[in-house]
Image (cartoon, rainbow, N blue to C red; front, side):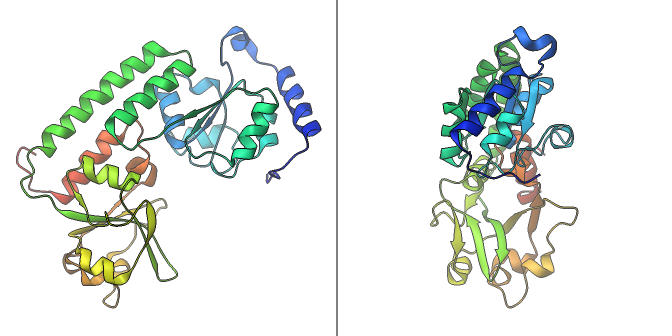
Length: 293
């Protein structure tokens, strides 16, 4: 159901009152018994620490585990949320990834008396571990979060050990989209840059800041050895399309070798608990002959 993004103060307060009266079952006495989880990594962490049954709403980026979107009310895209849609789900806590919004909607939620917590999202191992700790504290599941963090920390250590065996780093570009003749890539400071760094790969698009279009001339000059793309549907991107002879990517070393790596978008760029596994998978795809593998 599509919901408008702007509501009157009276509508918001009425929705908040309705939410306050919603039945909460045996968990009513617990702190944060009903959580709205906004952001793929936020939702994944909540499920991993055992808070899945307490989630009453998710956003469209909450793709893992699959039952999140299948079983929970969907309040829309992370950056285009509806205040009334959220309030109607009756949460007593909103945990939102950095960038959730728009900001006026979050302000409306707070004005209606709802607790809204934003979790920062730096694309690094430390960022993932901090995120787990913060979400565990907000959900009142600190012990479970510490257990998960210890597991993820060990996996990051294994990634670092593999990375240390790389003699000559390869160069790669993470392509977010190829539409309208524009190649949007992940540059410095982006989650794409973060995952390439974790996998011991040089970001050939480091001259771009964030996710931005890259010119054909710059792509050819960057000379990536591999192109990494998202596979968010049943069909992966096809090398013959990505590396078409008349395309900029087709005129790179990656194009000459047909080196296209497709991975699930949330898995690759979500910087949640599975990030060490994603970095390992990417590393193995780019360095198939890495010693010790």
